[in-house]
Length: 122
Image (cartoon, rainbow, N blue to C red; front, top):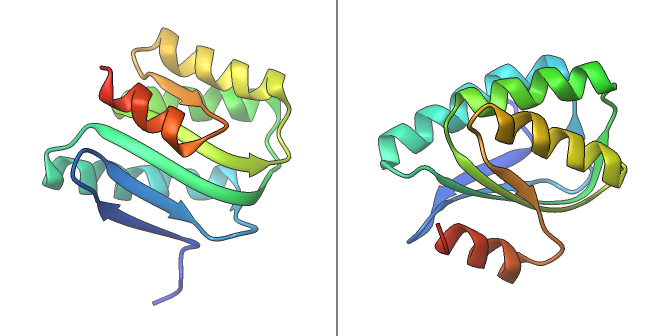
């Protein structure tokens, strides 16, 4: 089996997704990732997700970000993201807004502690 570039594990209060350094976000690969994440969360009975990554490459257009935000919202998960990546602050904000407006709260954070606090507070 190929290494998908991430690892999913259950923590006491959330599902942890750890992306490998240099992970490439490719729109065509996101449906499979989101299905796997959704299945894992359903089996774990946990709707909160912390996603960690470093040196992530995001080659998504604004239309791609819209599509991704819509797909993320369909999962009905609360997702906190802490990663260094090459996406702009405007791209982050747009993705957050698209997902949130469709019932899928996601938020980007600078620190893991802030992300965990946000997950715990809701």
